[in-house]
Structure formats: C-alpha cells, structure tokens
Length: 66
Image 1: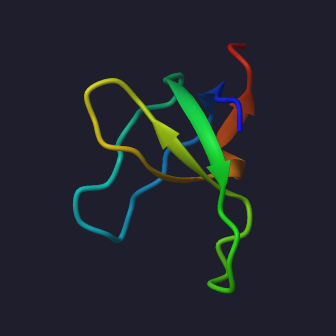
Image 2 (image 1 turned 60 degrees about the vertical axis):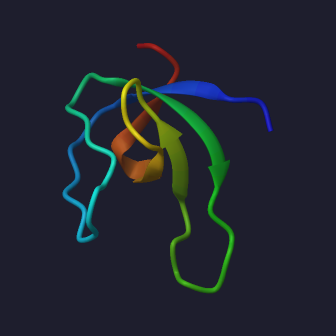
C-alpha cells in the first residue's frame, strides 16, 4: 500500500501505554487500514517523525495537506 499524508483535525487520547501523539494540524504518514474482528473499523496505522507508529481513528484526519 502506498503511504499518503493526512492532517490531524481532532485530538485523541489513547488508553494504551506509549501511544503515538500529535496535535491538531500535524501531518501524519498514513499506512494500512485496520482489518479484523476487534471493532476497530476506520482506524489507520500512522507514523510521525521521532515516534513509533500507532493506530489513529479516521474521523480525526483530513485527507492531504490542507
């Protein structure tokens, strides 16, 4: 899957240790979409500079660099 960039439009607080963190307006590199029975529909694996990747809800992102 080709990576793309999305802009954060809403913050999110993780319930898990060592989450990816970012603020509104940040650019993330977006990878795969979660697939599985866990009910994590519309979550994307994202990376940002200087951190390990993490899962981000699609509702918190805007496509592209706008």
